[in-house]
Length: 456
Image (cartoon, rainbow, N blue to C red; front, side, top):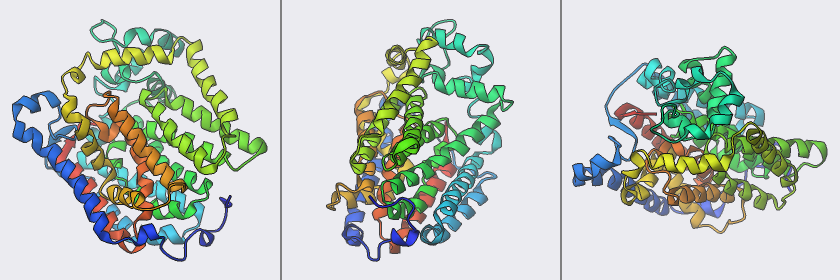
């Protein structure tokens, strides 16, 4: 096992691996296929007319929002930060020391995310998102006792009751609501603080991915995909929804497990314990995050050890045990949520459309660089490489989530925790073409936020 603390020079390859030297023709084929899916998802509802548009409930299908070209206070900063990152980050990623690079990645991503959100203005872009009647903060004033809330949480999930939870609280385990209650009690109440919390934590997930790769002996991949993580188009939705926060908790759970794979003794046990606790808590933020298990499995296969599970599994079970002790049983909540899901517009949204249009929506979150990167994975013989395993695990989680039929629409934000790991595939794109791909990522994110008024 290569040391995760080796100097950058020992990790940067002296020549391009075969998968990175492949002709651009293959990239064009994969990106063209992705564009075709996106175009079809946009055109089909238009061609079908009201018969389909009245049932998909997405005015800017496949994105959840409505077409509304606009500018805002974040427009100029977003363009400037995006352009600067395109020009500077490929060089920084190879030259900066590891700690400096991770801090720069997080700080730049925060600035980029905030600027994207501010295209819609402070109130609509950040402060007003999580305080709407169907969101988490609408329920915070009514939570006088967290144990009392947990004891009655499942009973209030189903709709059409006098005390039914709001749409988002009912659709998630209680961990999300508890988080915003804690923030409120710490004096950080209101939509502004909640929005900043989601941005600051959500952007840290990018560092978690890099730490995972480095812990698995693939610092070269971490550095190569760092510019793409900074300009992750999915940050459009990290800035306006709690799903960015969920993504971060799951990503750090994976990272801590990866850190535990090559450490023994107290330190290894501590990282395993943290990994299990974070992963255990993540499924109490979003039921679908059980699928992050594919990424954890990829970490263990890459490291060729299951040792972290000896402490991670008990830690995760302890988190579940605490929730159970206060009255919330995860499986009861899950079954109730499935019923609640089909009490709403999900019963009308056609899977015949969303079964494949979900993929189109997710392509907006990952950008054209990921189809190109995944194409290079499928054309290479590197199946045991940690980066390949992580990227394919993220893809597998997306496929499983789609086949569940419990995510019809809005997957550009719902699947952020899985889409993030497919970004690792961008490490296979040639260094000489990085700026071209990064520019495409930036243009996509800017186009989405300037042309569509996203709901989340």
